[in-house]
Image 1 (cartoon, rainbow, N blue to C red):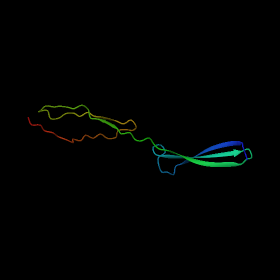
Image 2: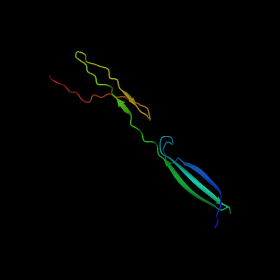
Image 3: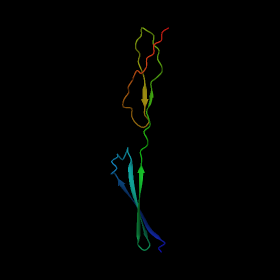
Image 4: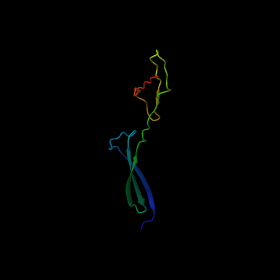
Length: 104
């Protein structure tokens, strides 16, 4: 029975067959370990490391403070901002989703 490992080599092999972008998608790395004993016999084994991208964090929208206007003024300026800590805001869209009329 051999008792001495004489050398060890760790070889990384990249597998880009997953079809994902290596910077923004899942990356798969394969490693091969080769060991050699004092009699020159070698053994090999491989393993795989899968690296998943960080999950996308949702952007933050801030529509600004509430505004009150008094007729005959019939317009105002809406000032809102958006931030994205892991990306870029590509679109801003204002949508009127509710109107309430009060009779006094």
